[in-house]
Image (tube, rainbow, N blue to C red):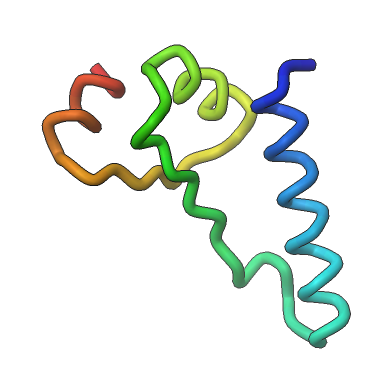
Length: 67
């Protein structure tokens, strides 16, 4: 497994743990991955690992990564 995949797993586990402790449904929390300093390969890796929401500073940079 790659660092990106492992990091996503760890963050998702932390979200689930925090939600359970707070009495919230983990499905109500959305993870927004910030991709502004990563290339298209890293974004694709996260996408293949199930990440669907990404944040970018500039539309043009985001478009380059998804096309």
